[in-house]
Image 1 (tube, rainbow, N blue to C red):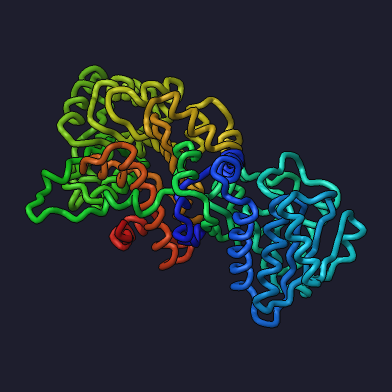
Image 2 (image 1 turned 180 degrees about the vertical axis):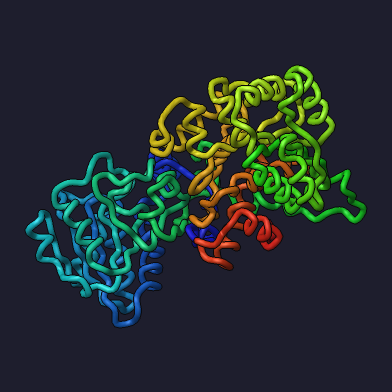
Length: 521
């Protein structure tokens, strides 16, 4: 699965928590349920040690770099396990004053075993640490998810030393210096190749630039009581096979195209006719029984000539009276199971007027995408009016809808998602690296699949067509959006594997849709 390598290793790994929520889980387990904190630390340490061992050839030296908190305790305990397994282990410890209780226990054990411990506290002492090549693997257990402000002093120098050492880095819980909530580096942060986190992933693992520091993410079970993580996750989940399963359900032996849904796609204008063709083609590959592309009259001949399985008709007719046009389109949209509106539409005041008359009046489920989002950015409530809606903005469209800068959307994608859902009352798919899906009932989901090769013209049109097909097939908006983003992401991964990141086109995504398999849930 690429970024998320070991999701199945934890019972509750499918949830996403903030660091504060995870601390509440730990506190409840220890204080209310009586789970010994030292036992949780011991379980965490064994997993960390196991991943460090996998990264290290026999004969290679492992450096375990520890701070003073629970992360440091995890590292110290991991060092003991690695030594017991026969690895050459040294501990580098950042002197931060008195260790926390469980961490102090593990330090005493490390001292009793006679493991080499190097202590640093400032720039001068960090400069005495071994040069690159001394350690084959470094375990980063310096700073955890409780970090509040920028990394300074000896800690900053130590993190820079880790990054410059050239060893494979295994981070404990979150790379040191990375904000576990926002995924942003606090001054400086370790760039890990592997990150081992406990019980559930954290929001900062998924919010960019966090994944660039995390590397491959492994979520492991440390013995937290069943259901405790889920109770604190605030509705956030990692989308995967469970989401995709409904889209992959086998057809009945007597199914026919009428039963599998009729999708109406209002899209395409001069210079943008490809958007309609891509959305329609993706919908057919995603299982819609019938697809009609309703396109601008000026491009209808060329779209119709290129359409094989897709039916076509004139959607927008710039020469028709506006009121008559709105009435005609209402009738066309209402006869179908679901509809997609927006890809490649003409960016004009007439289009805006048509959408304002159309969206609130058609109760069929709809995907609202691209130019439809742009044209109604000043009246976002209309986007969720009329019937069940799935909105699919990229960061630029989200910024226009919220009246903020793109940088502000990217700085806190979860807050932007919450604001979009609240403003529209619709299911929202906030596209980008690790797409998020939000629903009015509080559910939030992040897609672990996808790759930079999907940053290609038409990729969003394909996603709109997939989600539209799933709506037409009868899935509710949340289920259609969740399944659609996973299917789209996995198709992107399949296309990238076959062609490289620079060779993935929107048509390649469509071709890869049938290659996506779902594991039985």
